[in-house]
Length: 366
Image (tube, rainbow, N blue to C red; front, side, top):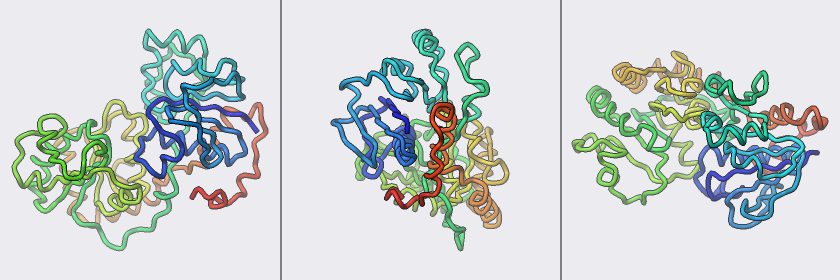
């Protein structure tokens, strides 16, 4: 058993928030990994911007503003080089690169990275390709694609195609405005009864006038009534509600963003059997098998054509829906934790094979 410390300062949360609050990919990944490492018989403490000490699924959560641990077997800093010194003398230090790795070579950070020389853990080929040759590295890189939770994996094919609904389920700052422009100009005229459902909105009340608040910023200004009616803005949804919305959509539309290092939203939609049309930006195209479970299209006209096809062609939708269910299930968080453990601990601690025989439901976390 190893003593593992993880530190993350992305937002205010602890492990209980996975079931009670909307979380980003970083926070949910930290919680899921910590739980699985505990299940593999390790002692895990996560330091975050939580309000008070708490235990959740065997994981100890501690405020990062409190006392710092002196040592541990493995210390994992999430993303930020400034966290590398948080544990003074760990036996091994790693940095879990959940965003782009470019910031590691920033002139204010590169000194810290070289001083501590953490083992980088990456999650996409895109990260590998842009990882600076001037930074310390493992050769080969430790590359483990993020796990997918069991609630999106192993779904049966739908008996019939969903209605003509598309879905966007990311941060609205990630090119929603341009997507709605393409929708209004190139998709809706050809599929007048289509609807674009927008999820990922967490800071607005349900009765807010999104067009008045976001027109000209996150949404295009001056849109006619029929366009506004076709774009349905949804405030914070439950996890179950979001999964139901994805399964009830014919296609996920996403133009991508340069900061995407993995894109869990598209990965989860694909695992649920939702075809996707995405722009080939950053790590996003790694989540979609072009021509098989969706399409990669940089050109707006071609992007719109693919969206229209998936909204209207039942045979195409069926092929890609079933292909996504066959090929896009990803790895479980249990497997992710096993790979993580093997990459960072196997040379110092024997791998506990007995956990592989424990059914997932035995720990009450499924």
